[in-house]
Length: 84
Length: 137
Image (cartoon, rainbow over all chains, first blue to last red; front, side, top):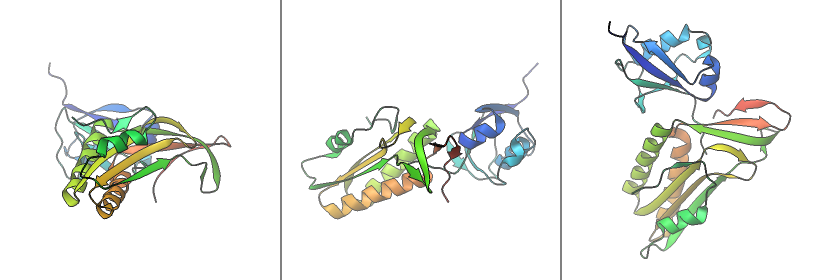
């Protein structure tokens, strides 16, 4: 039986603390877009505290909320950057 | 061959200066960002830096390429991750050019863009035991 199509979500800093995890596997949501993934995360425990439009990278490149995502993609939820 | 941007080891500004120095360069501008002992009136004990490594390396390379396209400079940039104490260097930038104006401008561009665009985060541990994620406002 084939695996359900899924993708990886990396969580950093404050977002990792919200979910109590640095990495999640999610079934590919409908719609299969960045915004769809954010909506799927929002209903998980801890997810309600996410901002409405968090910064997201797909495969290590910053992405728009309407960008399509595919099974096997690596998404990263990025809190406001604070280097330096 | 470029050196990795992120490192867990202490930053050595003289190593960056040596990297960018060249016979045709008449000046080197540097910036060293340090962990300071206070944040909005609260006493800081230490910071913990973390990063999304592959994206941070890629974004830093992009910013370096942008600087080199705008100014005739040789540049080096490093950022430390892990636990840093008061006075430790968190970020180091060096820009060398034939004349000082390009070196200063490129150095400023690199640190400002790095802070704005590179996925690095820091958690502040205060002397009173409280903890906060630093978020720019």
